[in-house]
Length: 390
Image (cartoon, rainbow, N blue to C red; front, side):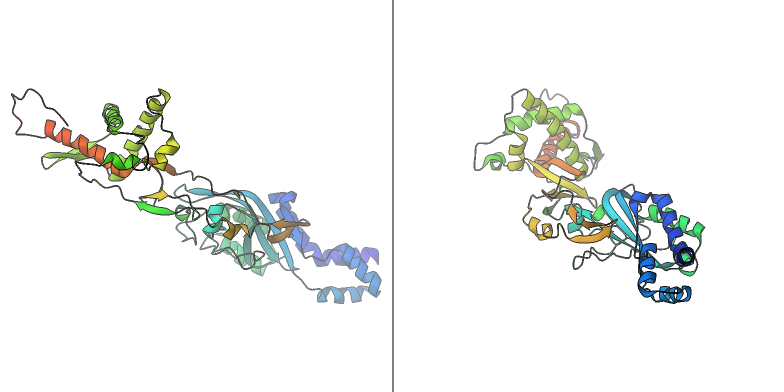
């Protein structure tokens, strides 16, 4: 009965194995795992133990529970949206459920075995997945596929086994995990990802026309690390660089840029000036000391605003307890959850180091006072020989 058994098994498992071959051809054998299909070896054992006839074997095969899945491993995926925002997702798994006739059952689902702290604390598995299944991390999540072309392929494969459609499905699945469609209203948008292990407070740089700024606070509980002479030197350096823009409105000069723009421009110039002065030994304060006295501040630009970044990692253990949790089996190996930055959150790529906005406002205000007196004062006497600026 061996040849007949082989033929009967091929009729039974042939469509499933063909789908598996299509996945291996597209993704590579090392990235695809077929699970839940009754093997030929198990079939032979059942025939020997029960002395099945060919008819008995056919009847028995119809009673075998069917829970067939193909798992696809995506070691590293770059998820990008229409605005060229992107993030990297490591060790993503897709589960594709099929029946014994080679048709797709339902849609497909996703799970993930490695997170960054930022992604995990933002509940971000993928842009089109609603939640990380904290209660049971083995649960694969069905993503929102919107109105994309993969929906038509899924619908067709739910009703028929077609090799060409399966090849198209592999292509569309590969593209789907790489895209965040903002137009499709994702559950999580890339620009809204924040490092929630850090504290954020809104930085609102405004044009505050102050004439008497108290620099004493810069060294309130210790020796001042920068003084007015330093800032006078920097102001001259800033003017010489000619990076600031001004507009003339209603008889006076005002900044020709937004508060955030001039804060960033002044900050970049300040860092250049500081590096030069520090290298020459004219300033001994380290950058860490400047941050410690809030002369320099770390910020993130998000949603058109500046947010000051704190450094509170008090809740590290809240998510580290999930490290090592079982996710799934893949090719006989138990896959477990891990964090790529388990030692603590890393600095974000779009993090900025800026000059304290109050200082930046003070400096641009002083420049405006001079510019408006020297060039915007129509009542200035033509015979005036000199002006002293204090």
